[in-house]
Image 1 (tube, rainbow, N blue to C red):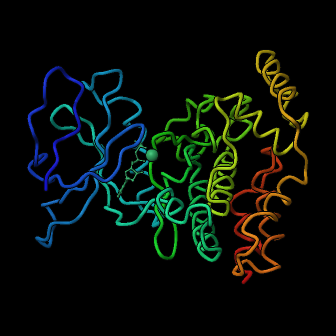
Image 2 (cartoon, rainbow, N blue to C red):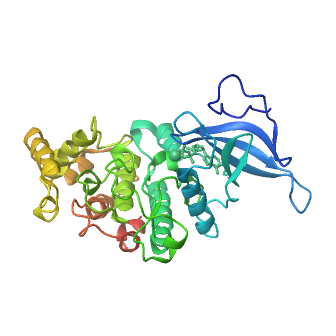
Amino acid sequence: MTVELPHSGKRGRDPPVHVLLDRFKLGEHLGKGAYGTVVRVKDTWCADGIDSDCAMKVFHPIDGHDDEVHDEVMQEANVLNYISKYPSVAHHFPCLRAHGRNFVVMDYLAYPTLKQSIKKTGARGMPIDRIQTLGLGMLHALSALHNMGLIHRDIKPDNVMCTAKSAIIIDFGLTVTVDPSSPSAKFVQSTWTDTPYAVTRPYRAPEIILELPQTTAVDVWAWGCCLMEMFAGCAILRGMDNWGQLECIINRFGTLPPSMTDRTTARVTTNVQRAETNARCGNVFWLPQYIAALRPSDVSITKEMRPLFVDMISHMLALDPALRWTAAQCIEHEFWTVA
Ligand SMILES: Nc1ncnc2c1ncn2[C@@H]1O[C@H](COP(=O)(O)OP(=O)(O)O)[C@@H](O)[C@H]1O
Ligand SMILES: [Mg+2]
């Protein structure tokens, strides 16, 4: 089966394309996200003569046209090249352009996304040993990414692929460097860090909404939300918009510490005060009570597991990014090894 390239945004119908650059044979549709459509391709230029399976992300046209390689595409391609030697990410080719479209080619990952895996288990939640395997695997991947001086900024179940033994991060379209002096800054831009819309809303850390500096701690918050979702079967923090998201966070975890609110601009402070007034104001007991009430008859969750899970999640979902644990600290937590 072949597919046509997703529409280029130009007037009229694009002619069907089945082979790109005399090299990549287009196959089935794999997934679609906010920035691109991913299709399976066969790379016909392999040294051993056997076509290899790859995935190709064809970027959506930006502002209705796609006449050049846009900064956003180059940013993602540069990140992919920079990190491609690390085993927990798919290997990629540099950014390519053909038929007026921009795309990157990467290893084909024949695995479900975490979103698909959570959907399959539904409200029962994922088996606890699976949460341990994927949770720890992803922390190793995040820790490696953070050591390279990068912040992913879009950790969510759609951007994680689940293998039997670990997790693989995909989609580096929003990735930036931690600071302009880090070695990765040579390859990857450090701008755009202050947008309050980085990270998909249910996984967005409070400091992003407050327009405070973004650090690697935003990925830990997002992964903490994902772990809760794996346990509960649904996302736990769901606001209607950016400020509604903050209200939801305050509802669960209580008011924000002055170490955060003292540093915001006057405009943000007004919105924070409104969110605090609207919120019912949760407390430090919300998380343990919520986790204690979930999956009461699940015998695979031993007596020792629940308090350890609560403890680890509390460190990952600490409101203040300065107090939140790093991915490397989380790896050392007892929860991963308790049976
Ligand atoms: N290497 C890959 N192998 C197989 N499927 C992939 C691969 N990369 C992405 N996908 C699928 O395509 C979807 C969209 O890809 P993604 O890179 O997240 O695009 P976007 O930036 O538009 O969100 C993913 O959720 C996943 O289902
Ligand atoms: Mg994506």
